[in-house]
Amino acid sequence: MKRSGRRPKCGQAREKLADYLEGRLKGRELRALEEHLQECEPCRQELRKLKELQALLRQELPRYWESLKPSPVFLARLRAMELPASRMPFEALAGFWQRHRRVLVAGVSICLVLVLGLTIPRLMLPKKPPMTVGSAAPLESAPLKAPLEGRLAERAAPVPSPTLPPARSLSTEYPEEEAREAVEIALSDPEVQSHLEGREYYIKGVHRFRYEGKDFSWDGPVVVIYLERFAPPGASLYVCVDLEEGRVAKVLPGGQE
Amino acid sequence: MRELSQEEANLIQRARSGDREAFGELMEAYAPRAYRLAFAIVGNESDAEDVVQEAFVTIYRKLRNLREESSFGSWLSRIVATRARDLLRRHRREKKYFESRVTQTRLGQGSSSIPAPESEGTSLDLRQAIDRLPELHRLVILLRYGEEASIEEIAQTLKRPAGTIRRMLSEAYRMLRLYLEGDEGP
Image 1 (cartoon, each protein chain N blue to C red):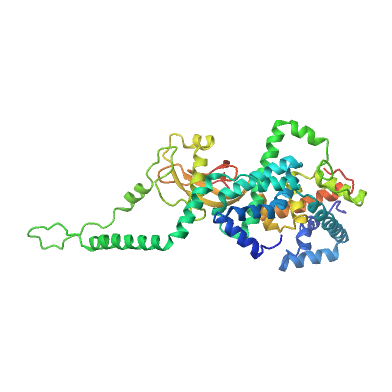
Image 2 (spheres, rainbow over the protein chains, first blue to last red):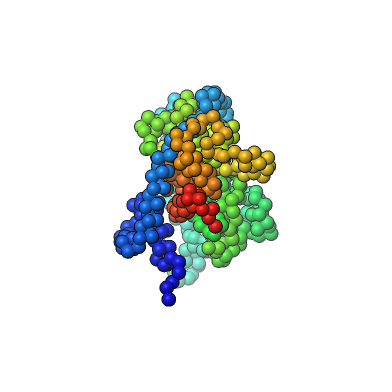
């Protein structure tokens, strides 16, 4: 019985035609497509039509694109625009640094030497263990580190909401200022607040995540929040924060694919 | 997209250090590119100008956080695209803007800066076909062929994975073929 419609192979081949024309196919994928095109006239025709369309786009669009010019009046307005004053303190500091760089570096170095000179000797003094009178057993020295659980508990101390965690670096991928801004935006979002209500949450950090779901895609900063003191699997929130717009783009419960 | 020249790199560096004169020159150099992208999204001169102006204010405030001079262009494009799409969403919610846009074709009408097409048939058909594309598909086509941006650059501008952009490009080709061949499609 003759099968009506396209063979399944043609559908897959046609999806790859654009990549093929732009030289993005390699190895086995490229060979498979070329073999199919040799055998399949309808797909070769599709390729020809795609080439024609791309040629038309290359011919027409650059011209149209270049024709979109801002008016000279607007450019003049842009040039005369008053820029925000928030950078001025930075400019003043930058100028101060340029002028007094050597003195500042010398001063900081001296302070550092003094601090180290006072601190290191104290650290190197051994702690004396308590003496046991009359005992032949070896003395036990006091533990140098707190038990692991205790240290974890200290790190994961619940943070009263809605405030930022104690001063520590929030991100290795974003400047600290941006990471803190992302956390502030996340914590002030009503949906996030509804998840955090009544919980001892912990701000794990701000990372760059790529996510592609059915209805939502993301490539940017994500604030990771553990919803329990020690996060069991699933008990976390991934808050996608759009720093440009200053808002939460999406809240994803932990463990969501 | 073209590569950053040494002169531009120096300009960005100076602007990052707080040199306002340098920032002014930077705006003048990048304003046309920012404007084209904004116009492609919002479809009119006035809104495009507002978007570009706001984008440069944001850039000025955050320029010192820029990690590499070479990423300035894509960073600017990203901010412009985000603000323009946000403005478009706001206007759509207000409904008035949407009603006025229905009566005009975005490409080829309504702006003093668009020239008359040389070949009425092909150019106008292509422009109308592009205009019918969904918003992101239209942007992908315009950035690919107008700005000559790579897939990766478009992905950065629109904050989507590169795989998504490739898929959208293929879908856009398919839709354009349907519109140009006179088939309304599914």
